Length: 83
Image 1 (cartoon, helix red, strand yellow):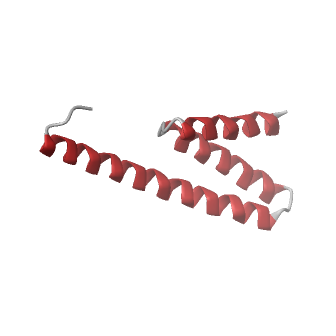
Image 2: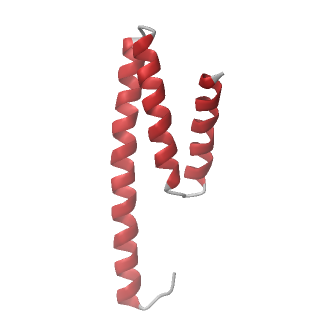
Image 3: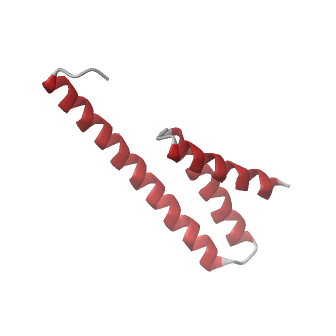
């Protein structure tokens, strides 16, 4: 049952990402950590490494997204546009 909950969590993360909500990265991270630990526990080491890789990409994506938002705010302030 808990695996279903984390599967749904990942689907919600995808929906939030489509909506350009940075909260999606938090949900992706939580889901990736769960699946990484679960797969390691059941002996699915390659799958566990996959989810570790996805966790690293999630962190990288969050950093890049945050950087892009700051750059957008600077451009907007310099040009006088409103957000």
